[in-house]
Image 1: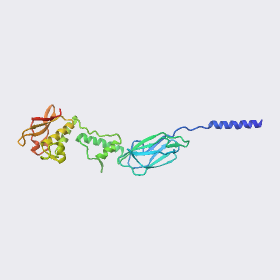
Image 2 (image 1 turned 30 degrees about the vertical axis):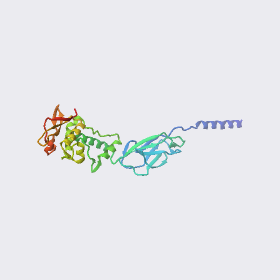
Image 3 (image 1 turned 180 degrees about the vertical axis):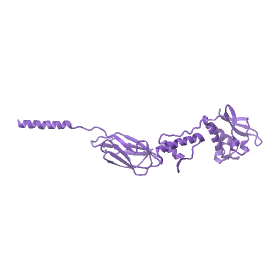
Image 4 (image 1 turned 90 degrees about the horizontal axis):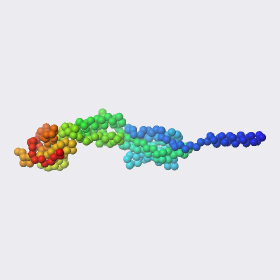
Length: 288
């Protein structure tokens, strides 16, 4: 009897122990990443990806850090629940980096592999708040002047506009540089201001040639103004007529309140070779 009772006790204990054994089939999940997804960081740093449990490397620790199509070499190691990814070279300022942790690159201690994980961050000399502030200021500048500034200023720091546009693009921001009809007054002033940098000469007869050589005749200036006004959404035309200086002088007019108005040459030019205007003539070109 004692032998049978002991055998039954052993079987009961073994069965109970077996019943408490569970199998882990849950994949490790990312709970935090530093730098956080889509943030702007001020300098190159180690990326830390933390999971919800202790982890180890899979058969292949396949981690990618890319700037566009360029792969950044990294040194990777694991400690506890965290994967550390350290760039071997300093990351470029103003660049966006995408982090990829491929499927089964990481496993938990039971051997369950991770699902693919993607994150991104941007390296910048300015913060996200500064990016947004600079974006608003730059857009306001363009709306008032119909051109972009050469730099975006942050105190004594100056960021060239081309670099600033790349930085804001990493956050999905793009400046609206389209000149619309509603801003025609500001557009006209800027167009005339841009035109005033060209002097008079017989070296160019088209707007493009005048921009290339730095000066041109009344035909070149008319072509330049007409093309610029058309691009700005303004209704404009070139007219030709005889003056004391030329039998085929040309000038530009724009449509205002359904009337053709001469471009304000005298406000921006000192030479009569441009300033000799009249209200009518043979229409050479018109964008109505």
